Length: 283
Image (cartoon, rainbow, N blue to C red; front, side, top):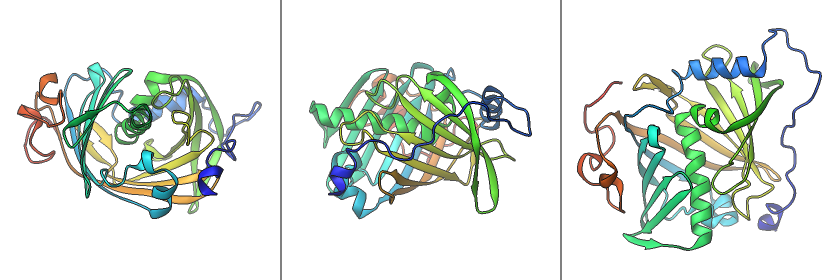
């Protein structure tokens, strides 16, 4: 029954409205510019490499509903290698079942399980979607800046007595193989950094019509940019359940690895050491 619910039409995702007025007098674009500035700028053209380690926990219900998307037997810990200037994003997951490596660049995606490359179309589509989403989660509004084709302000969001400016953003392409997706960005009114993103997931057949949000906490600086280190993801529609919690456990910038070091299932050369175990670049 729960799996069937996730195939239904999207329920309750915020929609833009005409005629809204705001006391601050700022446009959606002006708030988006503040958001980029609050994160330390747009890192899209940064030629350095950014390296993260993470550890997470998947909740049981989401594993049952979306086994291919969660891939929870493999996606427990991870090492990520990212080079924004050429859009190269590689992640090596580890879990009780073994290892999974995903190499994503532009429209291209390759996947290895336990060192063996696989070409299953469903696995490729699910992994393309989740990898793109994690680029947004970990590296913030620079991802949105590259893909936004429309944006507008929504009524402020409220949580725990605080009020948050919110932006509705349409991105093309969407996450993974989606032609488009929608994102609602909640902005911390003091730091101008992301407090939460609420997103549609059109890039995989069993998530079409579903939407999730991810909340961010404990920001730190990394190479001049601000990144979150604590994340909480929830399915918000058409059902409401907890999905995934994770933490950044290591980080470093500017090792100088090259594409050959992340060309296969095992990180080699300058990419091999765990994130945070080497002192390079700038905090």
